[in-house]
Each structure stands twice: as structure tokens, then as C-alpha cells.
Image 1: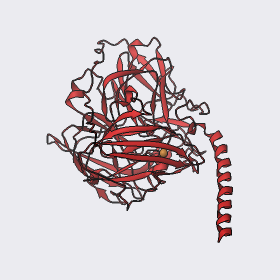
Image 2: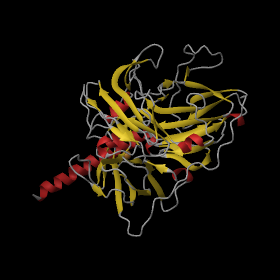
Image 3: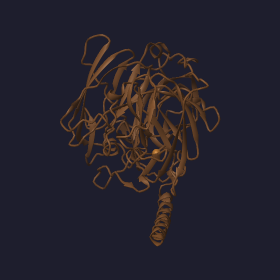
Image 4: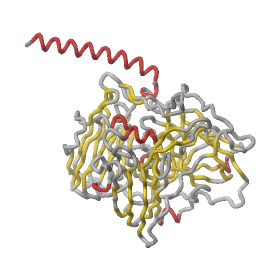
Length: 491
Ligand SMILES: [Cu+2]
């Protein structure tokens, strides 16, 4: 008996050493894991240039803009949309089409535009040959309308969620959330944006003309094989980072912009990579909104960091830029060329100093405190030592009660990870502390996804205003699908 135990211990030690050695080797290949937002000089430039752009002096492709999905319901205060998840082919490269997935198209999806207070119905059709779900990331809806792993849509089936939009203006998104197919379906193209409009955002002097001075930027890293097909490659360390960056599904994009203030709604739609954005001339990005909507004031930042699932709305003042063109950089590498057209006839007014009025969620001395310890081992992970079980309710939270959640990243067992974007469904929370300090200004608005680096401890104040069963998880999709997810029941 003793010798059997001894042999097991010996074997585990041997396996551990092997895994450790292998992980060191892989970490050398993919340094992003040890330095989450660091520049990535090993990324290669897109080789494609001048693909029928017809613009002298410009190289690359005009940035594609997702269409805004038409509302099929003429009744005021109501909106009806149809979304079809489908397979198709997308021409990223001039010579070969890539097999992809999309909503109402071959890649990505349209923008679903809701008004605050509106009653929304969506017909979701699954024309894929495998199950899917559609999760409304950041939307405050009852648990059974949320599109998590319990709202499976079988191939050929339809799902018809209904909800009333109760939250303020924000840029949210939607994507699949079924167990075992999320990461590959998102990688193949299933993702789209949700815009919520409200009277506050409408009345503020912010750029808000879609496609003129208000642009979405859905940023994704992808690998292509020799036949220009997506090469989704997950190792025991995680997903291999993509060498090619797509913006709104456009390879090597450029965009003509007015010589004025322009708004960009940036989504890190990567499966697993952290992104750090800057401008090539060192100008500031002025952040006006985070995941859950407008911040209380605009914040000028030299760089903006987004982990998977996070959004930031930023304004760039192209009238203040001396050059004719500048570039948006990701980790120091150009990913989007801006060509500044000007001078503009009517200069937009300066940005308002006050944006949203953000009331702190109440803090009571007897508030319930819950602790979530994140631990990963390569591609797998746990929360509070437990891997996801769809039949287990991990937490039960009273409806409408404010709580404090403490999220700790305990690092990786043997292998270090690059940190975890912690996402909670069905609500928007407030970050109240990061490592014992007040969070940075850009984290003081509403959030639904918060990055927790190795060894970090983040405190959030959270309240659920809708009942039901919700997921909380790491938004590295490979972690989410391999254990790092739990379930909270709100009642
Ligand atoms: Cu993770």
C-alpha cells in the first residue's frame, strides 16, 4: 500500500518536472503570457498591400463597417431583430477565401442598436451544424434570456429571447457561449456589437454619427494556414496567439477620418490575448466609456489596455494632429491607418467635462463578502479550487442586494498565466479597489469584465437587478471552456 502511494508520488513529481520544462520552452515562444500587455515584436506585418483600394498613396483595405441591423417592429418602444448564425466564406486575402462563421453574413455580425426602455425581441436561428448559444455580454436581462450555456440552440432550431433594456447607454457585444464550442465558434467569426442609446448620451456633445465620426473597432488576432484558412491551435499552454490582426474582419485596414473629434468603440474580441493600444504620434486617446457605459469624465491616456471581452470608447481629436496620417498601434505594431481629411467646415464642440453621473453602489457594514480565487494550469483552470459543473450552483445571491466580491489571481500551478479577465453575466459592477488602492480612473465606471493579473486582488461591488441563473468566468475562452467558470443563482 505504502509503496503504491510512493510510486504515485514519484510519478506525479516526474510528470510535474516534464510539464514545467515544457512550459518554460513554450513560454519562450509566447512571451505574452508572462507580460500580458507588453509589445509583441515577434508579430509579423501583413504582407497584403494595395488590394484594389484605388486610393493613391494608401495601402491596404478600407476598414469594413458592420451594418446596423434593421428593426422589424414599427411600434414605438418595441424592437424586433433576426439573427442567423451561419457558415460561409470570407475574402480576407485577395487570392483565397477563408471558411468562416457569422451572424446574417459570413463573418462577425451586424450591430444591434437598442434604446433604453425599449422592449426587444430577437429571433435567433442556428443554421450551423453544431449547437450554439447567443450570449448578450454586458446586458442586464433575466438569467433565462442571457444566452449562457443553459440556453442551447440545436442545429436548425430557433431561440426567441425577450427583454426590456433597463441600463444606460453602452457598447456591449454578443457571442456564443455553449460548452465545448464557444472558443472555436468565436474564432471562426461569431461575434457582434450591441449599442444602447439613452437620452443622456444623445444630448451630450459627443461624436455619434455612425460611420462618419463614430466607428466600431472589433479587434482580433488570427492565424492562417498555407491555404489561408483559420488555424485555431490550442496547446496545453493555451491558444497560440494570432500573427495577423483583423479589425472589423478587415486585413491591413485604413480609414478616412475628418479633421475633427472622432469616436471609436473598441472591443477586444480576441479569444485569449491582452491588447494595448496607442497612437503612432504619441497623441492621447481620450477614453469616454468603459464596458458598462460612459465614465463620469473623459480621461486622456497615452495607451489603453483591454483584456479579452473588455470595451473602451475613445475619442481622438484629429484636428490636433500635425501629420496627414497616423496609425493605431497594438503592442507597438500598426494595425489601422488613419488618413485625416480636412480641414472640416464646422469644428465640433469640445468634449463635455461631465459625462455620466455614476452613483456609487451602496456599501453597508454587514454586506456579504464573497471570495473568488482564480487558479490556472495551462489551458485549464478553477475558481475556488473547483472546475465548472453545470449541475452545481456555486453561489446564491439575493435579488437587488449589493455585495462585495473579492477576486484573487493565485497564479498558475507550475505554469504562470498572463492574468484572467473576470466576467460576470447579467449585471454591471463597480471596481472599488485594486491591490488595496483605489482603481485607476478608467476603471471607475461600470464594468462587466475586469482584468486580474497574477498575484492581484480586485474588489468589486455588485448587485443583480434581474433574477435567474448566471455564469461568472474567465473571459479567456479556452479557460472558460476548461473549468474556470461558476454559476450564481439570483433569487
Ligand atoms: Cu483565465
